[in-house]
Image 1 (spheres, rainbow, N blue to C red):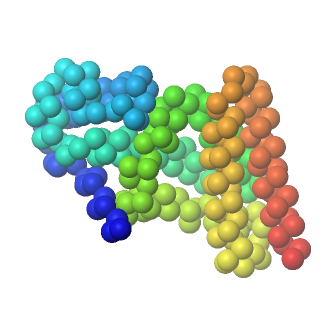
Image 2 (cartoon, rainbow, N blue to C red; image 1 turned 120 degrees about the vertical axis):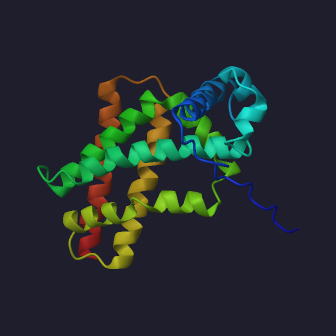
Length: 210
């Protein structure tokens, strides 16, 4: 069977006045509350509009469907995470290994602090994860990570370096998600993050020997 076309994810228009910007922000904040309360399966534009106190027609002026709202929330979450990690990756006061550990700890902490929203966005991901926009956003931070891995383990082939970057992200997101689903203390979260980073660094050391 032919694949169904992906729903449009781009907003219909960008707000240009303060009033319209406030309206879009109200819609997005309402969307977060609906998503955290009802989950991705029950997320609808009608519920978001009701929670925001606006008409569905006003919502549709800016967002063509529920997928575009969810993707906008995901974009903002990705952007915030990218700013956090890029700041650590580029902190030359730390050596490369310590930056990889610090980035892992920071991600695990935010994963636990924002667990309800991130879980809900994860449930909504099938609605847009195969879109070109989603692939572009996910790959945007890989060059900075690859450069840091090169500093931590110089001499890796480009293929090994690319694999290591993917491994780091996969371990970060998968283990971070699992840790966030349990009731853990901040010290326990940091211990999990440090252990995950140390396993990755051990892999880098072994890769250099091969």
